[in-house]
Length: 183
Image (cartoon, rainbow, N blue to C red; front, side, top):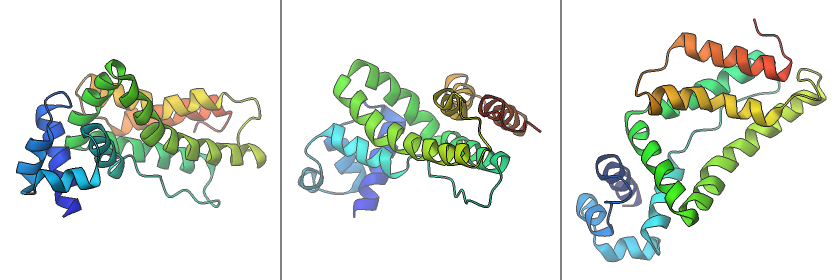
């Protein structure tokens, strides 16, 4: 039942956007009672954040045996796959705009979706500082911004498909910031 509700929330978000999404609409689409939604979530915001978190960018399977280029490539590919998903590319820009208007949503969005993945990626890169693959004075925050920023702009901002060339450019840029081999 929860899976069908999550699917309904995501479909409603993609079609109507956050502002027009309602508990009634989600309940109708999920063929569930509104009370079933309220048993799980106290508000539309909670429901939406749980639904989007459930399909948030997966953590790339980075292993200690991977070299830095492979690590960065896997991270970039995981972001690209997430952003390039048809539903996500319709949902994310709308939620980002709504998060700017709604500080409570914005804080929760950052905590549940942004910080969790970013913290993991930061830890992965900081481990590489210890091994000497990443310069100790590298701007990790900027590198983390680069992992997703250009892809987000291409896919969600410009509404174009990403490409192998773009992903490779992002990888080279991130490696350059980290002090790693760019080729």
